[in-house]
Image (tube, rainbow, N blue to C red):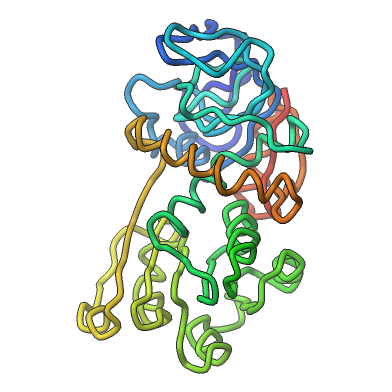
Length: 325
C-alpha cells in the first residue's frame, strides 16, 4: 500500500507519499481500506518530531479515518467485511489501509457520506469526553470554547447547544466569528482585538464560564481561571500557547474550581473504547437527526498532505481539512 511517511522531521515538505508494507489485523482488530482521513494539530507535531506515536501503533500520521472494513482479525464480533465505518486511531490514518482495535470503530452516522465522516472521530471523542464525561456540562450552563472555528471548536459549539448550554467562543477575526455564530455560538470574542475575560464577564453579568475548553495551555492559564464561574471546570486539551505557567491557587480555591488536562492518543484501549461507545450513544443520534454536523473546510488528495498541513499551520480554515485517498 501507500502511506504518508516522515523520513526526517521538518516542515510540510517532510511528508512523503511512499510504498510501505500492508498492515495486518491482530487479534481484536479490523483492517480498514481507507477512503479519507483528516488533519489534526497532533499530526503537525508528529511531522516536526515532537509527538511520537504510542509504542506498537502505526508510525504514520493520522488520528482518524473513514472507509470500508477489508478484513476482520480473530476475536472480533459485530463487524463484517464491507461495512462502511469511521474510526479513532493512534496513528496510521494517512494511508490506504490501517489496522485498528474494533472498540475504536464506529458505523457511519445516518445520512453521512464516507469522506465527510472522516472529520468526525477525533473531534467527537475529544469534545464528548472532555466537555461532558469529565467536565459535566449541563443545560443552562455557559461553555467557553477557545478556537471556536477549529474542528474541535465547531463540534463543541454544536454539541453544547444541542444539550441546552450557552456558548461563548474566541476566534481570530469577524469571518471566523460569523461562522461560529452560524453554528449557534451566543457570545463572540475576537481574541486579536478583545480581552476574553472582560467580554465574558460582560456577557454573563459577571458570572463567567461554567466550563472552558482550552486548546492554548500555558499562555491562557491565569486568564482562564479568572474567566471561570464559581464551581467552574477548566478542561485543557492543547498546548499551542506553551507548557509552563504560574497558577494562583488562591484564585482557584476561591472559585472552588477544577482543572483537568487530558490527551486521547495514548489512553489505554479500554478507555478509548468507552469514549467511542459513549459517542456512538450520545453524539451519533444528534448527527443522524441533523442537529450536529461535521464542518469540512476543504478536501485535499492524501498524496498532497503537505498542502493540507500548510493550510492548518496557517489556521486558514474553519472546521476540518480532510484528506482523500
